[in-house]
Image (cartoon, rainbow, N blue to C red):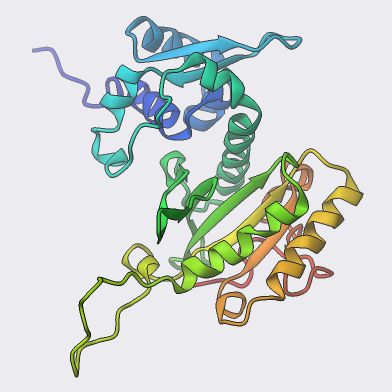
Length: 300
């Protein structure tokens, strides 16, 4: 009797799931995310197969080397987002649109490169961080049709120093490519402050005596508010300082508990890619002269 391999197709499934969730990735990025332990030719064959089945497509960038950028088709995205591991996620409005992908490659590939930096560092350290623990553009409503949508949400469990269970951490990531002015970047601080305190109300409904007060909306998703990480790219040292100064100035306007309860850190993308995310490269907005790991202080 022929034995059935229950893992047959698992690599194809993971490749499609990663492309559906990350939105886009180069051949090398897909390879390093899903199967760094095999030859890249195997990943190329897998991507070609998925393309032949109409699940993914690609564009070729005009720069030297003619880099191929892969993304899910509408058909592929619909299939992937029906899987349990992607439940609750929705395909982006422009899923499968080659022009939309081309116009977003600068930012989209930088977000994927950042995910890969955390993933490779976690593998090296023995921490628990899987490819699908990186979720781009999670919608967090603020009411009145407003929302906070971080570039990515990350779930990460650090390995305990004593061999214990370690700590479960969550982070919102904002990846800034200097396409907006420092003031617009800094405006994200009060937006996250509002998310930290936002409590939805139901018009016309009054709270009765003895009833528990309503909780902030974010508590329905997270036991602890995710730390906030700003990653700064496409600018030199002077530009980095200008943007960190703007972020710090915005943080000084906080009159609530946000900065006391939530670590808010910033680092240049170049430092993150060179030294790894757990290196002491991050500058807390409460003390920008300090250099810490993104895991500091360790949360619950």
